[in-house]
Length: 111
Image (cartoon, rainbow, N blue to C red; front, side, top):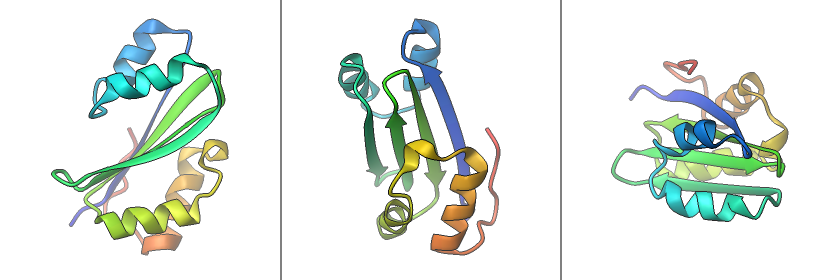
């Protein structure tokens, strides 16, 4: 298994950036509707088919999504428990938290 970690970020008022941000997210249209309200939020989702977890946070101005691939749902829950305030994390901090929760990742790609 080769765990990969990436982060995407977009301003909520930038339509092109939001379209690019939402495109790879399954059911991204539902997330878009939630983000339209421009309220702070934190959410997570797990895709059983691809073994991919997504951790989304918005401060009502921008939204970020950390994606962790090739993990089990139990590992995704371990990451979620280790990241109670995901919106405050940058990619390096998130990666360190994942490594602490799961052990060193085998291939932590930067996207």
